[in-house]
Image: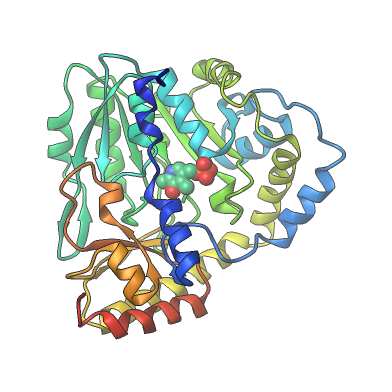
Length: 372
Ligand SMILES: *Cc1c(COP(=O)(O)O)cnc(C)c1O
């Protein structure tokens, strides 16, 4: 008896592996991107209130309460919104719905790890466009992107603020992406799970430039520091949304009802209480702490414009040697590249306490100039 070959995507990912190793070695875990902070009290309270009131199936498109809260935020109608079990399911359902065998999906590299298995499971081929890495950091070459488009391309999948690079697209870049999609008649999927986590001006959304073809993906887990709640969403053109809701009947059917209700209320509270401003302020402090600490060791660290990740180089080290020697867990760039990752490049997650970040810096300083 043999499982189907498509299960090759089930290979263990480095993220949980690094977390287990970190726990065993009592390492500071700057690998997997889950916050050390507890979620805001207003979210916990809203979820508690929902238990006992929202205990049965929600409609596959989502609880009306949550679709309305999201519609209000995005300036659309509830019919433009479908709720999912985290952004992970949103991306899965979108790829199943938009592409199939013979189609190509253009993906920027480095990429978030779910995109390639999801494209593969849909039977489509991922065409990678690698960001340029220069002295100032990562940059999208729009000319290279256009060259990657073929007659078989159906979808352009982007992510900003971008995991793992922290890149945010400027308005001209968003406009150019929309123009390309219109010229070649492509769908756009814009993974914006870090939409509230930026350090400069509030970024515009890709959908503003091509609302007729853009699906925006979001996550309550990332916004509200509760990655275990598994509530995400898709905002897109009304005509396609009933089909997306229909497709997700066959994955998880609906996201957990009490968590949807809790998130609906918490999204409103977050705006009212200035939660996102405080969140950004806290992350800006931690980003600066990590960035200046790494740079003061003479390391090359690239400043992120958003997300709670940054990329930096540790010449001579690999992730497994480093976690043993320094007791600091990081994710190697190879997790975000299909092949030939830039050497000695690592992703640091700074959604951790300032104590953890300081301890990690101290430990790194001890080993950094004496490679294993
Ligand atoms: C975390 C993450 C996701 C998945 O979000 P969930 O809501 O936890 O499923 C999707 N895209 C990116 C870029 C992420 O970092």
